[in-house]
Image 1 (tube, each protein chain N blue to C red):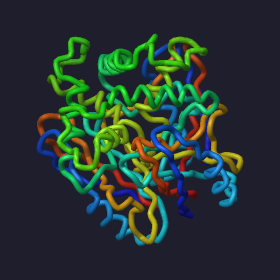
Image 2 (image 1 turned 120 degrees about the horizontal axis):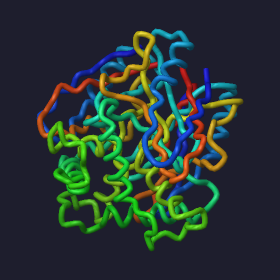
Image 3 (image 1 turned 60 degrees about the horizontal axis):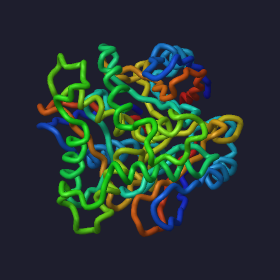
Image 4 (image 1 turned 90 degrees about the horizontal axis):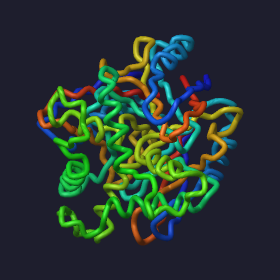
Length: 134
Length: 134
Length: 134
C-alpha cells in the first residue's frame, strides 16, 4: 500500500513524524514488513535521528547551515532565493529515501530513534512524503 | 524483478536516468509498488535532485568538489589516482541506494525531482545500476 | 523475514559485515529479492564502500573526523561526551538505511563493494542492525 503524508513546516529544522508513520504501519496490519519513505521535494530531506534531546537536532541544523552557506560566490543557481541552492546541497548530503523494517507490527526503530523531515528552506511549506508499506 | 541499467558517463557530474527507470517500472506493470535502485560502484553515487535547472546540478558538483579536494595531504590511499579517494568520500556523503514508491503505475517522484547517477571520477565509465521492482 | 545482526565495534572506523548479511540472504533462499538494512542507533551509520584497500576506509574515517570536529563551540548538546554530537552529524551525513537487490540468490553488490557499519563513537559498542529480506 502507498499513502501520502503532508508535513507542515515553519522554517528550517527537523520535524518529527514517527507517530504519523507508525499509524500507517498499524493500519497496514503487517507483523513483519518494510516501510519505505520518500520526500517529494529537493529542498527538504529525511533523517532518522536522536529523539530525546531537542538540542541535538538544533545543533545538527546549525552545523549544516555553517557548512552549506547562503550567498556562496560559487553558486550560479540563484534565481529562487539565497536559501534555494544551499537547500539542494543539504538534500544531497542527507537522505531523500529511507527503508525501515517492520517488526512485531511496528517500525523497528531503536529506542532513541525518531523519523524526521528536515526542512532546509527559510520559509515553511506543506511537504509531501510518500509512504510504501509491504 | 531485478534488472540492470548501464549509464555511460563522460566525466564528473550528474546524469539523469529517470526515463530509463520509468520504462522498467512501466514494463513491470504494477499499479503500486517499490522501485529500489543501487549503483554497483564506490566512486559514483545516486541522488534525487532538481530536474529543471542544469545550473543547480552544476553548482552541486562544484560545491562537492570544493569540499572534497584532490591532493589532500590527509590521503594515504593514492595509488588509483588523485580523483579516487575523493570519489569514495563523495560516495559516502551522498547515496548508494534509493527506494522510490510506485503510484499509479509510475515512479512517485515530485514534479521537480529526477533520478541521477553522480559520477565522481574525472574519466567517464560505463556505470552499472541494479533495479529491483516489486 | 526480519532478522537482527549484532556487530561489536572497538572504536571509530568501518566494520565489514557483508559475509554475515550474505548468510542471511542465503538462508532466505530467494533467487531474486530485496535486502534492506537499518542500523538502530544514531551515532553509527551504514555505508557500501571499497572492500579491497583498508587505506581507503581509514582515509574515509580520518576525512570525516576532520570535517566534523569534537569540541566545536557551535555544539550545545554536550552532556553525553565530546564525541556524541559529532557522531549524530556523521550519521546524518552518511546513511542509516540501505536497500540492496538480491540477484542469483546473492547480494547484487559490485566486485569492489562491501557493506560496512561505521562506528562514530570513540568507545566500541554492540551495534544492532535490522535486516529485512523479501
